[in-house]
Image 1 (tube, rainbow, N blue to C red):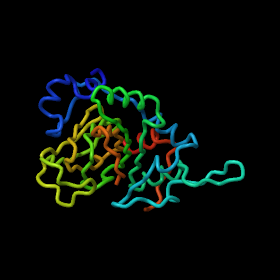
Image 2: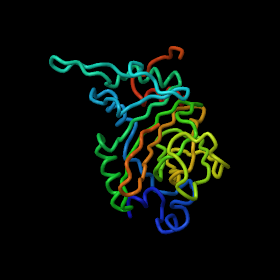
Image 3: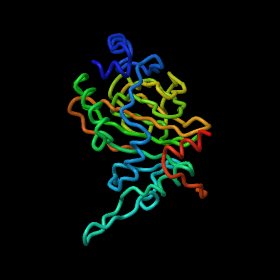
Length: 249
């Protein structure tokens, strides 16, 4: 249980009291689990091979058009659309959009190993997503996931609202226009972990004064299929790390 321990501390009381029951902030006394860094994300964006659907961008509750953050690449005699354009991505983040990097375990060895170990310990499939959210912005509205979620805050901080988890399966995955009473409202700081039970509606806003980056580890039921996930010009920073430094300053 070493991987779970790096997220929650002592696994026994967590599994007995919180797992599948209630949202909980863990840390900062918990050992800091950070299988991916801003430098890794920069390398993925600028490496030339990251392509949609491995990245999406959301602004004002809508998905941005493909051309807003990607560019085509020519390989031999053929042109292929949808490759990450670092300049476009950073401009969109600077203008308020949230970057979503999907299934990071497919292309990042550290996240793949971490996800595999957590999956083996819990006996459930684990997927990993990164959210990069500007100051004061919200990537997704209140929504339900068909998974238990561990949110690892990698950079900056984020203000979360979590509502009660459902007592049965009479609910749908996706946006939750009537999420019910708030059971946890908290700011998650760098190095902390937020646990959200399956089906509990939740939303988050990047805290003012900097860029917020978090890794979501989604723990699905055995055999469950993964569901779909739900502008003024700004100066362009040469990397996510530089953009974070500029916004945090």
